[in-house]
Amino acid sequence: MNAAMYKAVSGSVAQMRRLDIATQNLANLKTPAFKGQRLAFGEMFASQPPADPTGGSVAIAEQRTDFSQGEIQHTGNDFDLALDGEGFFVLKGRFGPRYTREGTFTRASDGTMMNSAGEPVMGDGGEPIRITGHKVEVNAEGVVRTEEGEMGRLKIVRFGDRRVLSKEPRGLYRAPETIKPEPAAEYRVLQGSVEQSNVNPIDAMVALITLHRQFEAYSKVMQMMDGATARMLSEGARL
Image 1: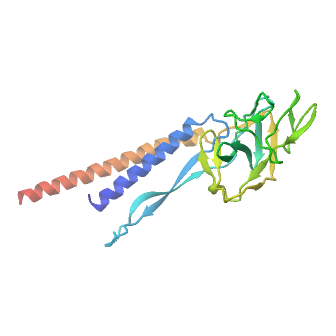
Image 2: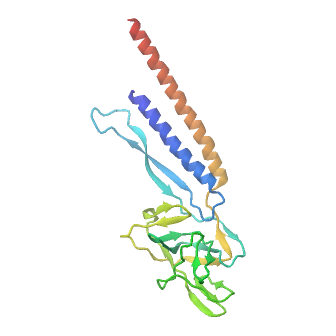
Image 3: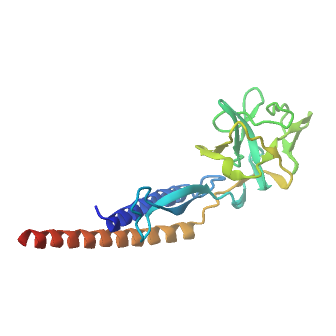
């Protein structure tokens, strides 16, 4: 396969990865606090001489998460919490702490505040938030109270470089053990609300249309090169 065909094939593969990301973003338009994904592209140069003077093939340099805030939707549920501003809620995961913006919480039979998967919501004292009483109130600073008094304060943290976070299912993120988060400051906890997905449906549809056209262009280029190669071999065989 010649260098030009390699470039076209690598471009097609890159567009297929972009399509995967675009469809994933579209599928999560209604997922609370979902953060859209983006791909960054680079050029992969040949490692062995002679180098191709026209450049290398297309490569995916990095997959990035768009951490911009989604719209806040009021639900009226006392255990629905949204973060307006920076930060993440902290959960006690089975394999270490997990971080999330999805605040659709519930209360277990023992009073522990937890997410839909049963992972406890952590307080800033290092223990899960446990609630007694009936009427639950959460103020803007994350202090949880009932008619029986203060139950604790939610642990809200931030990362100086959010690129260290690895995305996991169910809106969770994991940080390397060597990197410790710091307390968040620029935020408000909004009770009775949830953060929506930050994926713009119009942008996502435009991206799909653009990807379809670009993939078609790569396919036509490969067909043209394949036809040119076939003609060259046929003419060579007649000589």
